[in-house]
Length: 141
Ligand SMILES: [Zn+2]
Image (cartoon, rainbow, N blue to C red; front, top):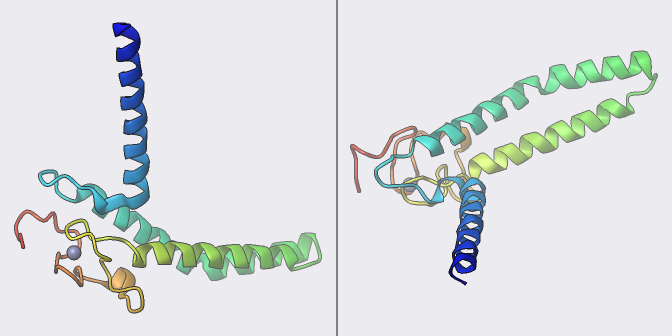
């Protein structure tokens, strides 16, 4: 009885841990430890920003390359159009995730509001003033 009860508790703990990981991954910076700073959140933000810049810069070369490849080997540009639409969608999706990214200190949208956003060019949180990539240790409040 005691063993099964403990096993049940362990299972519930494991499930809670998995949910905690999922929530943390999904909502990124919402739950950050006070002492550990915001390094993990900033790394995530930086990675998204770099990905968005790469997608933006590679759009024309990739689509033109795909169009040339498709015209040469398939004699139709249709697969390249699919690539272009997918690439645009991905760029918009990553851009939206950057714009909706939440400040690790105050939990509000870091780069602006729903209607007006500075995107990756936001140098600090528009709500609490936390500078970009700041660990939040020097300036409290
Ligand atoms: Zn903030």
